[in-house]
Image (tube, rainbow, N blue to C red; front, side):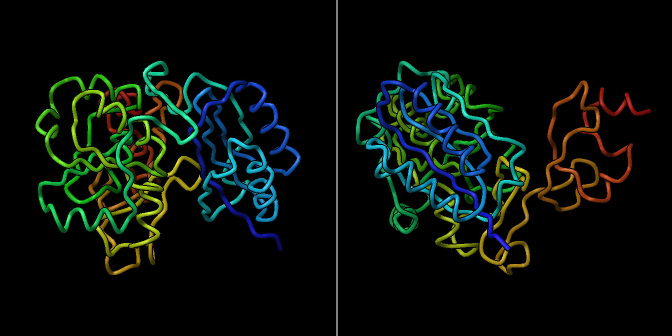
Length: 304
């Protein structure tokens, strides 16, 4: 029986012909039976693909043969091609859509002017040294933080990465500008860009976690500064560290929008034709039509 795996990776590096890279990557994945999502731009590549472990190993080897990607790191996760409905490989203006393609500058070493990289243990050392002065700043969509975040983290009011620039320029976070700020996101890629955008807007001491939440969770499980589950963009919807929800140190942050029962399961509103809202709904409420909607008044009314 074959073993499946999921690869998460990115690399910021100048690419003169993103379209050619897109076509090569699509052909490579198709030949190996991998599915998932890959974005390519003039700034680099960002991908999550799944498939047979041997096919994933082959993919890593072949991708690293391209000179610009020879040092690219790959994170391995449980899963398979079945976690993705299909293969999507596209070229875009940005590999992370902050809406600032001309502001971002990259060279062979990555993003120019980004935050200082910290390994997971260095994050803990910074907190031990600077205490409550350290601010954890969530670089994800606010929804993702409903089931997991760093302890006492600041969670910006954003629905997409496009919202971040206006949020940073709103003045709401000016109190952080002279504090040590640790930006974080799932695998680290969003913070590569976010930390540079923050520094460009006067945040003086900005850090980012090497490998993001994934690397930190692999290092500390539920015994560090991370609390709850990690939202992921595939069929799994979420994942946990250590022994998972059975771990004595696990903290359940998410609650059902209807009954308040602890849950880390996001579900699509039953009104799929008119509502694209994804919310936390427990197993019991999901079984009943009157509590299988997003909770908004309009969606609730449409079921009565």
